[in-house]
Amino acid sequence: MTNITIGWIALPFFLGFFIYLFPKLDKFLALFGTVVSVGYALQLFAQQSPLRLVLLDNFGNILFVDQLTGYFILTNALVTAAVLLYCWNTDKTTFFYAQTLILHGSVNAAFACSDFISLYVALEVSGIAAFLLIAYPRTNRSIWVGLSYLFVGNTAMLFYLIGAALVYKANHSFDFVGLRGAPPEALALIFLGLLIKGGVFVSGLWLPLTHSESETPVSALLSGVVVKTGVLPLLRCALVVPEIDPIVRIFGVGATLLGVIYAIFEKDTKRMLALSTISQLGWILVSPVVGGFYALAHGIVKAALFLAVGSLPSRNIKEIQQKPINTGLWIVLVVTSLSISGAPLLVGFGAKMLTMKNLLPWQSIIMNVAAVGTMICYARFIFLPHNREQEVRSGIWAPLLLLIGALVATNIFYPQAYTVANIVKALAIIGIGCLSYVFVFKRSFVKLPRVLERFENLVGFMSLTLIVLFWMRFAA
Image (spheres, rainbow, N blue to C red):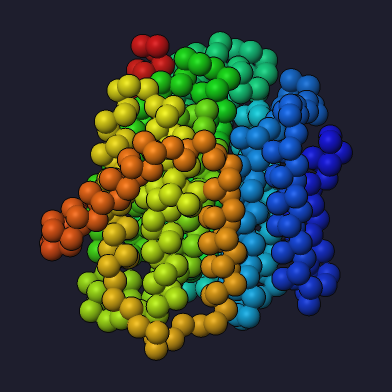
């Protein structure tokens, strides 16, 4: 298993180089890399005990893979495969496929790392690959958005790296466990970097610009998997250092509320999906022990939603409410909207019920309200007019069928969710959310200001978040 793990991490980078030698095979080699990741993830689910590899003693390079890792790896594989299929018959160059594969490999590496230095390297590589994909169209707008993303990410990693050095100074090791004996400022700096990289709470207000202005397949990658490179380490730290668990849960609740409030009043479909991602990342963090399953459910759904919304005739929700969309596309939007809202027979149901089962008492009411808010956000897709005559490009159906199939198939991960009480609760949340949308929010003209998304305000929130993190760790 050790050799398999090292080979699996190295394979995407090897294939990324190989693509340039055989450019006619670029799509097939990239898709092969994702298939290998699916196989590796399924092997982790079948394996009873976790695998820990210490490659360079105290200087770092610690790999740790278990079922929690498996959820994130499977998400990465399915989303990347769907994006490749989406781009199959387009004019994307070999460079695009190579960078997609390198991004896939660096994200996998970030999911497997269990020390702060190896994680730093993986996050930096993934950030550069993501930047190149965002800027791929080479327009002034795409380059500016890409540079903004890169600058925010590098600022986050600067804080993170200082915190990692403080952990090593205190423990002579970069292992995640070192947070237990590290000074409060080490945790504050590391968590600030991860919160920014993961797009959590106010630190994630860079998401709407980056995810909405990128090309559709890149948006699916960013929202489906890339932001989770900052989330899984937060879950790991909460699990290995119990004192950190309350901090992660608090930021999870805050992200859930902030994201859903902004998403409800957003009229741009891609921005709404990006703001919803902030909320859904909060759902992953509110219960660290089961966060992996929710990450899988969210990643598949959000990738499908971005691919589907990218095929709509307009991004303005008011405009598409007046003009019928393709019926097949509408069905996809309904299924994905129901899944992310927790409808039975789809993976979102099991993920939401399992998360709610593991909430602390003070979280329960807030998260139930947030669940209704999620349904209000996505009800706008359910009530769209549709028409069979509306045409869409044929290449979209293969990736969407893959992701919809995954939504149904992965529902088997938590069959215990299917109790009468859970089903009634889920249907009640969906019903209340739909009624609230139809009678209240559909007619709402409220538009929340975007001033908080400005770069200078993001930097200010970084400073405030750092102070809050330091206080929370010191108080603990």
